[in-house]
Length: 269
Length: 256
Image 1 (tube, each protein chain N blue to C red):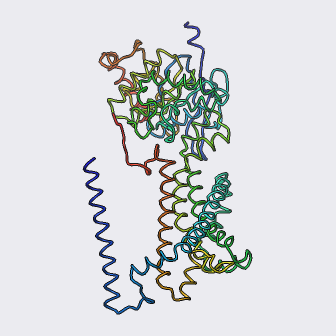
Image 2 (cartoon, rainbow over the protein chains, first blue to last red; image 1 turned 135 degrees about the horizontal axis):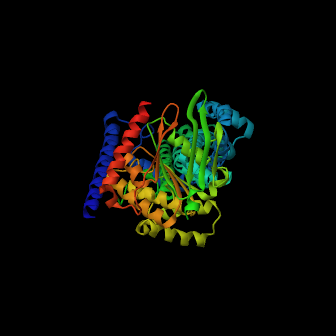
Image 3 (cartoon, helix red, strand yellow; image 1 turned 90 degrees about the vertical axis):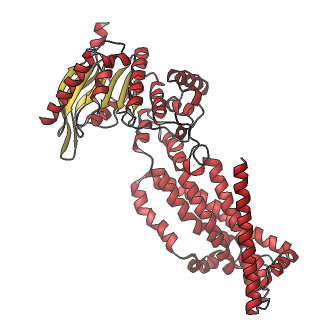
């Protein structure tokens, strides 16, 4: 136990050292290149801007978080449903799967203007863009998990004359859980890219009520570089939050039985 | 009693199985009496696993007929259990819930399942790991769970496809002895596929040697060793003589 604590402290110290070094480098560049604050504000200025405009910053943070989370959740539900259809037959997969790849290969930035034109400017388009970008990893991973069940397990169920529903709910779906969570982890990361990209195009219905992407554009136009930095930092915090939430959900669902979710604590004998 | 034992419990009549132009099983006829323990042994490609899957109804025949207790294999599934080469446990279920999977699929009520699980756990000596997940178990323990699960539905016919192939020799011997003990208690008819002559002799009342390409019955050897069979059986002269007899038959089967 003390060893673990020791290791933790060393890790913390390392992290602090790296952080201070980066901050030092930041100040050094400002001093060395004579950077004006509108080009490169100091860390302290960024922090001050963030504190001064915290309610505005937090509002943007929440808007983007909601759009990204909404898109992600919708993609999980739709992705599982589509994967269930794909898992029904090889024919379905070979016929419909290319469209999933198409969805993945089309750069979202290229499609965003079309979506805005059809759905309109505002949060619903942003959510839709996040949804589209999140969908392919969920479909691909879940389908893979559903169809890669060992033949012997299928035969075991057959020996008990199991119904289609029993095979699906007691065998295929639980078997697909680890793959589904891999998909969710990937999509949680890119949902933010989708949401922020969407906001760059879609902006907001009303001034001062946009998400992080919109506020970044606005801050850039106003040359509020210190606040711009604060917004970028907020994007990063949001990314970390999503990543850890996805990791936690995965751990929570799988830690009892799946190797990937927990280090082995085998009781071999 | 002798009358009951000679009634064919499993009967294969001119069983033929083809994949495309390849004949896997060629005209196999075989009668297994109630309570018999028959091992299928032979070189790779002799179709012994295929024959077992045909008896279980998991594979359809190309021609011929199989009956299990007078029924088609599919209809006889309720009295048949199959033990696979790997333990085929569901990793997301505890040992206890793996044991009762079959009962759950058959619609047995939860209370009854719990009770049955306790009974099975003590039968195979796994009570202490009831709440463990499969990944926490050794290979031998996983196989014991698999066997206990197969016995949960009180089968009359037990079909086993090299269940101990992945175990080391010592665990395998132990599992063989345990299987004999369970057989004394439960009296099923067994068909057992194996690569190991020693294992086949130890377990069987009869050994069918199959030859390959196509799979045919090469030899049908009775194993008249007395029951109960225990670790001591392996050191008897009769056991050793039978092992070398079966080995010879297997070699001849491979040449022909």
